[in-house]
Length: 59
Image (cartoon, one colour):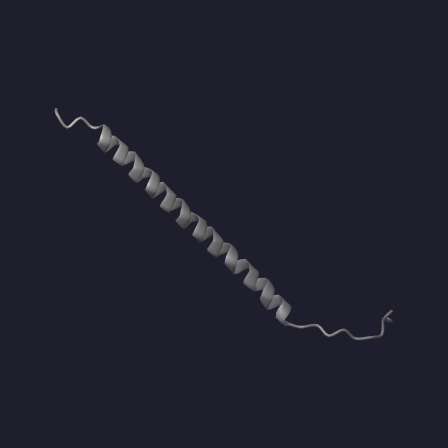
């Protein structure tokens, strides 16, 4: 067991690591938004292709 008189070494880098953790959260949000836009665009394209296929060209 250690007694209360020993001094512990504390690294200052711990705060920097904590600050870095906040940055990927922003990147994840941007990535998710980008993926959502891509999915929305694909769904819109599929919907438009279906409308085009169903369109009666013999008007």
